[in-house]
Length: 448
Image (cartoon, rainbow, N blue to C red; front, side, top):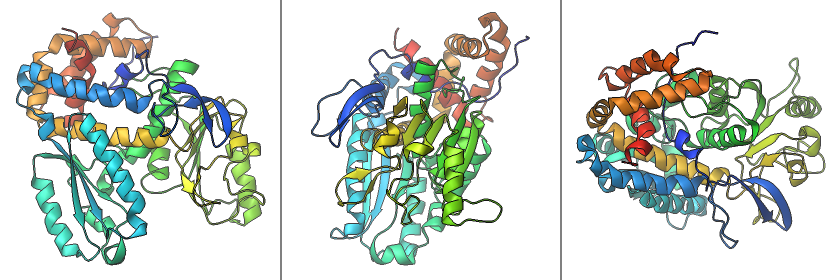
């Protein structure tokens, strides 16, 4: 069959990630008094437990630091200073407000991880009395500050601000070139359509990355030129339809050729009926077909099953499936973390994430990575020049990626590679193409 030209995104960091021998994405681990095997490792460190082999976060974050240090070796990028590039988080709520306690902990984790990547972390904190007009004024300043690579509001806001400020309207004013957490509805719309865009929502993309590694390494799936596994031929179920997790995840999976079932949600039904028994029947019928289960329901105050608070029970899970569970709720005793999937159901899976050390670290890693990308977007003219200066490396790298995906020879992909290179350096093209290209060739440049 003749080679078919490829015109989507090409490059990124995942092509490098998937080749790292010290990235041990499957580990054995004890959790809540039980022993599990084939746990997908989002991070190699879990507080209070042994040091595991390197996971997703423990490989990518040091690599970003290595790349940050190397930028000064590239003539076109020698003036780019990663340490001067800020990842801004905005936290609104009083210090004694328990509703924002979890947010404070999360912000601290993001800050520490950001610094490890070579970037700077910036926190802007406001009390619950801050007004909408004050927030809009500050947002305009942040949007125009070239030292800020990405910015995000830590939601929800606490206290009075959480009741009086329309955070959707506020987030829609974030400059989409800095919208690293996918809070602007323009970003969400572009992502849902598969259009050219700066960023994806961090949690959905982190979930897809974890699934991609498993599919490529353990199931022999093809790695697409954009660094994501092909989900072709796989049925996947998404549980949950929130604007920043379930819904964008569902749309992304379709773009990567998955047969997406769902998203399942609180109003799922059949023929207009959405009573509890009908919902439960539909949940079971769809989920037990799934090759991959993506859980992002979170805490749900209704009883799906009579005898458990978990959403996915053993009868809903196909033997040998993959489970990526993004939910972490504190139910029952108020202390132990629980996900969407019952541990007895996880036992049927070929591989799965746990409530800690899985999707959470992948989400934070993705956010920091997008801050790193934001730094490059703020210097896109220099990035394009760096890509142009290394044309031979770019075209050879592109030809190799295209040939591998298409099952063709590299000579078949030369023309396509040249075309994609020209797109990357074209000032009228979307900046993502130049940034993806630079990420793809950095490992080769760093060998020299």
